[in-house]
Length: 291
Image 1 (cartoon, rainbow, N blue to C red):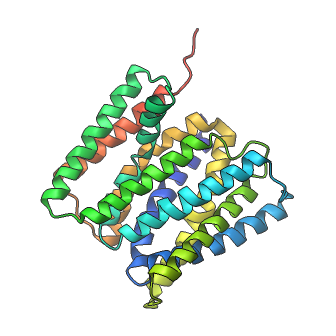
Image 2: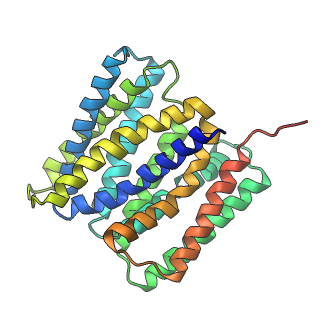
Image 3: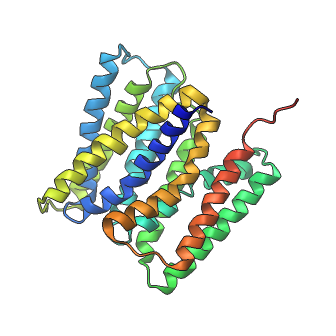
């Protein structure tokens, strides 16, 4: 792995993790589902426009359309929709920690349902992840965390896990940026319907809301996705996935820096253990080299 790939991986992890802090800023002044629907609409327009400029086609294979619909529904509408709603009730740092357990969920359910083999290192990583989550949840429960918000975050992570297991590759056959843009349109359409049904239109326009919305739309929404696919193309999906181990750390660090969220001792210990667990699971997927 060269220095450029390392820089790209660090940049992706930081951009992805920062989305929870900017989302927390958004939902403080705007209805979450409505804001997210508009975000995906704008990101989708940008993504499709970029795809057309790159010469990519609207004509997707059947597998690509399936991936587009599943990820648009599970990732954009359900996963992010539930997280946006939850962040009106819980802190961004906790939401980012729960979301970061998704690689652990994928490994566990892949082993439980699909019979995917896990090396001892992977099993140790899963055990560490469960321990880390238990430490954080125990401390937060004692502190009176909102159970509904926490449950929504776990449900969102589970939805993304289902999507990941259902569709092994959305990029096969090319047209990657087109797929990304169309996924965003799917998410926007579903969220718009939900917003009309469940949310009143009540927006408190502030400079922070406008800045956070623009940042969330352009950086985690478009740029991070673009960097991710470039990284996968450079070093492969398995090696690229190892950078997910940084998400818990970056998530709590950005929330503490920009929102002033306080972390207890158990939070810090739990984050360190989850980080180690994710790294162990991802490293266990690396192919064994023989000399």
